[in-house]
Amino acid sequence: MPHETPSPIDLPEPELEESGLGWAFGVILIASLFLLFANAASLRDWVDDQPPSPLQAQAAEYADQWVDLTEGLGIGLPRKAMHERWKHAEAARFPGQKSEGEAADGPSD
Image (tube, rainbow, N blue to C red; front, side, top):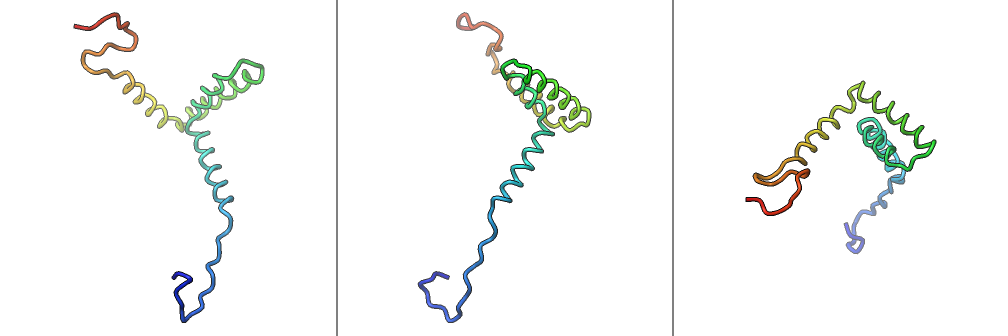
C-alpha cells in the first residue's frame, strides 16, 4: 500500500534481504565451472591464440590434457555435436551459390 494512504494498521517496513553479492558470486562460479568442463575446446583454442611464450606453451599443454580428459569422460560431447551442426550449417549454400573456396570471377550462368 502506498505511504500516502492512511492505514488502520501500522505495518512494519519490509526487511531487506541480504546483499545479492553472495548470490551473484555463486552464479558466476557455477557458470564458470560449467564452461570449464563443458567447453574445454574453446579454452584450448583461446590459449592457442595467445602470443608464443614459455608460459603459453605450458598452458597449451595443460589445455590439451584438459580437453583429452573432458572428452574421455564424455562431458564435451554436447559441445562437439553442436559444433559439428554449426559447421554443417555454415557450409550450406543456396542453390547456384558458389562455395566459399571457389573464386567468384564473374557472373554465373
